[in-house]
Image 1: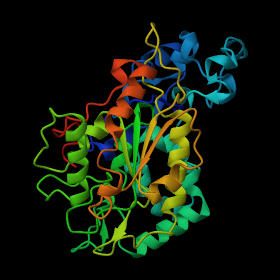
Image 2: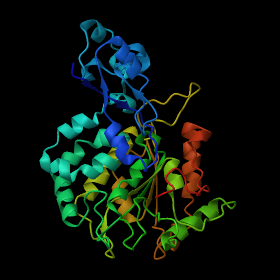
Image 3: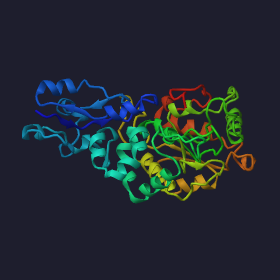
Image 4: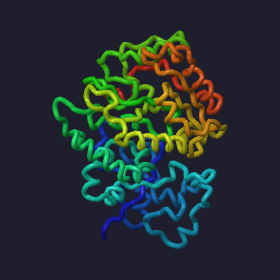
Length: 379
C-alpha cells in the first residue's frame, strides 16, 4: 500500500540552527500509512527545525488546535469531518492563526515547474519554514522569478556554488539569515537598506557583520545610542547581532543582495517588493508567540510589534502600516553622516521595551544589552 503525504502544521517557533538547514527540507514532509495506530505514532513525530507540529492525529484528538476540515489534504471519514472544530478555533477576527496554516514541502515542490525548481532551491532550503508557508505563492510570482534569473546569472545559485571571489554579497546560503527569527516570535523589526558591499561583511542581518569583521560606523552609533539609554551596556568588540535575531528582532534589509563593492546596486530588481510583502506578513502574524494574559496563551495572529525605521528609505517601508496596532519609531539614520541629526538621543530602544512590556508584559522586552552570539552564532 502506497504511503500518503501528511500535511504538517508548522508552529510559529522554529529552531535557529543553520547547520541542519538542508536536513530540515528533506524532513519537512511527514508520511503516514492508513490505520489508527499509524496516526497515533505520527502524532509523536518531530520535524527537524520545528519545535511543535500538528498531525492528523492531533487534529482529531485536540480540539483547541484542530484546523478547519476544509483545509485537510488527507481524506477523512464523514464522521471525522463532522467532528472538526468550528472556524473560530483556527481564525481570529477573520485571520487564520499562524499555527493552523498547513504546509507541505513536497506539495510545494511538486507545484513548481522545471525552471522554478532550479531557481527556488535556495528558498526551499534556507527560507525559514514559518515564513515559507505564508510566502510560498509570493516567490512563484513572475517578478520574483525574474529576480532569481538575474541573480542566477550573477552567480547566486546553489549553496555549494561559490565562485571566488564572490560577485554578490552575502553568500547564497546567508541571504535568508533574517528568517532564522521565526515569524511568530517577531517583537521588533529593524529595517535596513541593503547588505554591506565589502568582503566578509554581509551575512543576512541588517546592520550586522560576521564575527572578526571590524564594526561598521553605523553600528558603532547604534551601540552608542544603547549606551545612552542603558548606561550598564558594555559595547561588544564585535558587530554580530545574531543574539538580537534569536530574541525576536527581525533584522531585515529591503534589498537582500548587493554587488561586491557597489552599494545599492541591486535596488529596483524586485527585492523591495518581496521585503514589502515580508513586512505585510509581520503586520498580520508577527508576535503570535508572545504570550499574553493569565493563561499565557498566544492568539496565533499578530497583535502589534515595534518597527524601528531609521532614515527616509526605511520610513517609506512602514508608511502604510497601522499606527494604532504597531509602535512605529522614526529617526535619522545611524550613519555618521546623519546620526547627529536625530538618531543619537532618539530613545528608541527604551521606548520599544516600554511599549512591549505594556502590551505583552515583562517577557515581551528585548535585552538590547545582550549581544553575545546567540543561537545563530555561526553566522
